[in-house]
Image (cartoon, rainbow, N blue to C red; front, side):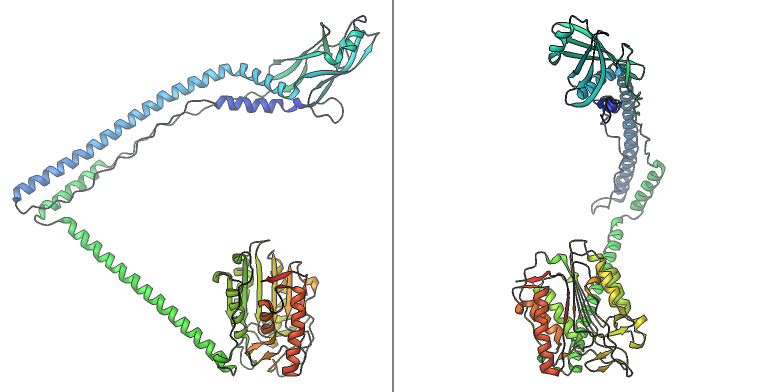
Length: 573
């Protein structure tokens, strides 16, 4: 309930406050049962007995019989003790439950009085020191009209304060010092404001709610009845052992000992265990040997493949550019993830991208030594199929990215091909004439990377999308088809796209270093040649100068790399 419009009545939640106080009181200090229930008895282990060198057979058999009887009695004694402990525990539970319910009954009887006490506390907390305000005297009615307010609380009610006319000036003058007492009483579940007493200048007057002379009590809250129910502590169901089964085991064990005089029945078990451990050790050693051989073969294959790549490129391993990257200032390398794909070898009739594998390996070296990325944060693939690329960008990469925190580097070296109004990266199992289906959409790749929610994304596409390569057209009938690189609108605000060339240009390679021109100068720029702090604008200016000058000198053709995206710091030394 409220007085003036917009006023919040602090008594509106009295019922909830009293409810909380009563529930806390009902639970506070109730006795707790702390005794631990008995556990199932643990049967003593079967003994190992053997005939002594200077012990007769009869004496040994008598010793075995005594051991059997002793163990059988021990089992029975354990069970008897356990059943006794259960009885004592259940008796304690029963006694505790009686005491608990007696305490609960006492609290049920004290509940009305405690509820009244909590009501008084709740009202005092909400109303504090009630005061009268805005007194206006009506001489004809011989009464003041005014407002009853609570100090420090948004509460006010209209009241009528009857005062004889000869006392009215004194009351008016001393109203600010008046002592106001509001009395409440319970009527069933209802909390009634039954009386308002105002003391001023040594005089006492009774006020009424509202603007009339009625002294009818006013309901200010309804207090719910709270049932008190505390469950008993449950008794324990004994976990009895199967005495008969234990006794049969006991008899069989000691009979076996007696029938095998001079032998230790535990030796056979130990021999079996020894043979089992030896077999498992042999299997483990074989698994380790197979794993080591697998690693050796993989390393050998990788080394030979790299050698073969260089030989097929017309290079010897000694003439491929050797990098020595210095560590960059990376705050937390564990929050950087790199995807590196080098697609060199395609199907029959499609020119190889001669230095794609060299490029990818150099970018991996930069990621490991300059950026200091953990190996598990580098997804490295040579000659990736479309399925492999989809698995990386749709599953493996999203699982490594923490939204708003991870920085992502995506590097691709390989063929590109125009397809309608889009361009396609070419997986090694795709073909130019089916690129619209078998290629990997550049637009889709950028959208997938944007959806990662990464802190920063750098995309490097070392490919041209004209349908031509430095070694000739991808198809004999191919003609250059100009496909514009994705504009800034296609990139998220935290994304940077580096393309090898403009739409109508070929991406050239450098025979001397055994690398593509874009990747060669990109790594030089990112490793410090472009400056101590390399941002998007610095990198774009550096590549525009170095790559085009190199392509014109080497091939007498232009090549203008494109760097698109907002200006962000890429690497610092």
